[in-house]
Amino acid sequence: KAALVACTPLGVMEMFDYYNIELDGKNVVIINRSGLVGKPLYHLLLARDATVITCHSKTKNINELCQLADIIITAVGDRKKFTLTPDMIKKDAVIIDVAISRYNEKLVGDTDYEQIIEKASYATPVPGGVGPMTVAMLLKNTITAASLSSQIER
Image (cartoon, rainbow, N blue to C red):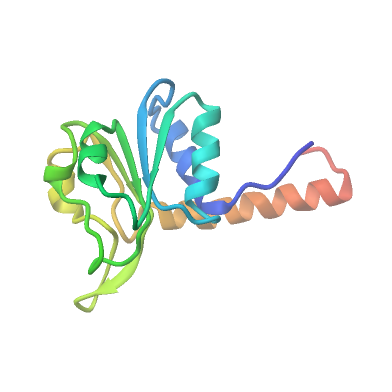
């Protein structure tokens, strides 16, 4: 039976597909355990045969786990509490920054894009990365919900 998927995780998965980022057998670290981002992403990635580790505020060894990850998805949203820095990632890792917050009068994510992209093979900027995908997936979910409720073929 068809079901709707949370917009942000769905947008992240669409990005992986669009950019042909392989998930099968990859080590993925998600720095978030919320019901809107972290948990749905965990299940979506697991279904695509990724090895997934979820980190949160009580995780003691985030740096070490990130250094082992092929893909890091960060969604803390508080630059004062957490920043993913280049020394925390391995070369050519894929970095998906889902977070957005105001810091020093600017909208920022959990990474400094200009620094992280020098080491990563792919990274999303903030703003302008995952946010627009979330909006697009909201529209997709709206169409899906309408077709499910009216029994129309998509």
